[in-house]
Length: 557
Ligand SMILES: Cc1cc2nc3c(=O)[nH]c(=O)nc-3n(C[C@H](O)[C@H](O)[C@H](O)COP(=O)(O)OP(=O)(O)OC[C@H]3O[C@@H](n4cnc5c(N)ncnc54)[C@H](O)[C@@H]3O)c2cc1C
Image (tube, rainbow, N blue to C red; front, side, top):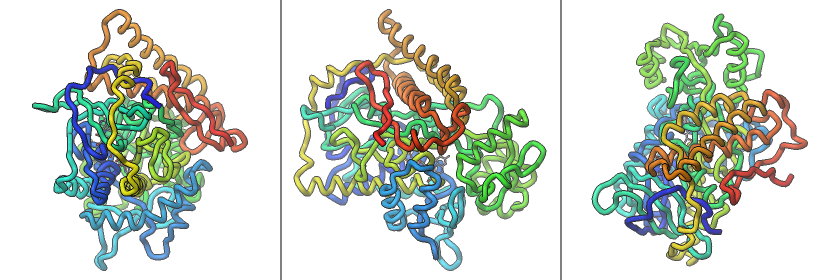
């Protein structure tokens, strides 16, 4: 299948070649790169900013795995299935929880240092939806930073991994059989590799992370603009479960007009006993769920939103004053410092919080080996939808998913290589040129897309709110087309390419969310407040129509 649409961009001015090109340098991308090396394949990691600029380094709480005494993969599976609200792929979850503990041990062997008790055992905490202490953490609340540090150190010392930073990947390239054979990218570099170029490879792995930047308020960093999902759609791949965006219940509330990445108050703070209280100081989660503050995230985010509406407030509070200064300083040093930098001292005052977009449970659809519907194109980490999260991700399952399925992709590539099924590929240049160029919105469109999405497709959704969002997004697309027709197109550059990706992903997300007329997991419809298994215990598969518009189709039941 050839790539049908591409971002408007200059023709490649330089070329490079490798065996496996990996897009993204978070836990997923770096794990693929390190593991394909073991099969003797060369890897090239291409990343938008610097190596550790992604969600991975921001992860606080930890990584879930049945490592503790008495815990089992089966119990981890049960908790994951409950959180996923009937839409998890049970086999994918089984793979995650059974391969997870050894994958964490291999991460430790790569150099990641987890917090340990005096007996040398890994310390485990609890988070929402987990019935056991099974979250391994590092540096107290700096787990992602430590994982990133260890993986970055490992790739930097491997001469078989080529690293290209400040490189925005644009689109997939295929050969005459429609097999992925490389990609186009824009490098902000010097010398030979500057501007738009092309990398040729035997296989392409997307590990581009999430899409939180589609919303105004998010915990995700600026690079999380859904580029991988947008690229996959343009390449003809199927994406799924886009409507299931997890809104974290407790990002720090920094004011009514907050935009961009917000600091996160990890679930582990509630895991250690902090209470959610309303404007009157009342613990409103007690009696709403057996796990109270540790109920699954969607339940907590909804309860907070509901209480905010009842009280006409724009935030609630997280009260951890009873921890005392010493516990705050040792267990949550990063969060303590962040709060203090914003003028709040959690030792003496409750922390203001409000829900914000946090995690994309959906993404590019993959099979258990990480293969997408386009031959030779793989996806792992937050950009992928392996089926493990269903309608809602269980806390701290995402770093684990990135790790486990990245290893599986590397294993599949190694097997194919050994069987002679991973030959060098050529690029079908005529097909690449024939793909329709997508007009670029101006860079200011980013903020408008975010406002439309937060207003129309945030924690609370309805047909009316999403129709407003869809109309606003369609207008931005129309204006981009008109500017091309009037020969006043936006310049192709990082900001406008990202805006085009955000626009496509936002449009696809709203189309799916409007179609799912029920409330399930983290998808909350005011106008369809009940879960409707008879009609909706199935996935919506989104692809790009010939017109360039995303179309969502319910999977056969
Ligand atoms: C604040 C916060 C706290 C979290 N806490 C936890 C936690 O405690 N436990 C847990 O399991 N999960 C947690 N998560 C989620 C978890 O961190 C992410 O799901 C996970 O790190 C994603 O890893 P990844 O490798 O898929 O993507 P990322 O780490 O986001 O990496 C994506 C990479 O792709 C690159 N990229 C993107 N687009 C392009 C492009 N077009 N061209 C080139 N490169 C591109 C980026 O620059 C980046 O290098 C948290 C997330 C956040 C934001």
